[in-house]
Length: 259
Image (cartoon, rainbow, N blue to C red):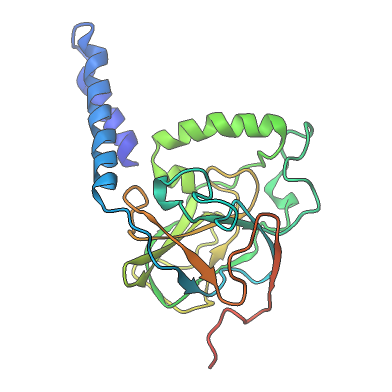
């Protein structure tokens, strides 16, 4: 149960038996109060321009950057859920970003990113590890993107976990947290409280949550709860911040510290 869904359930349950129009007013009021509390809690935290944090890359091999802060800030068009400096990366499939009109969807296994190892960007403690959501078919055609838009609205009711899909959040220390989203179901090999090292495998790239095709959504933020977090700018050692459509290569083992 996510908190927003639980609030909706309680609100509707309390409305049963109330005379009209209270049956509608009560749940809307409770839901509104919950949303206001989230927004107030987020805005109450000071928004500053934090220093850029350098971490090792979360992937190996040749990948392509998309929707990153090298091109615009906020990179995903919003500051919510700590996404100010977020980036998407994927392994180029040779297809255009929007895959035409047909087929409307493809299985996740059609994309080379699916199942690729995802690595810790530093010495850290695991504070969140979610691994139970399915990997759905792609949404990167014109009809698929339309479906994704409506699906995203529904997912938002379920809270950040439904948007992020299977995900891991790491505490890197000094108030900095790394979030990895859209991981493959059953691939997460860490649990809350685990200590991880730079370059250690934590999961695999998937297509869970609000995702158009298999890719990794990565971000740094200043709080372990995305609802309250502000984004933190990052640099990947040896890479920097890939621009939109820019390919970069990480040699195997490059993300591991020297022994």
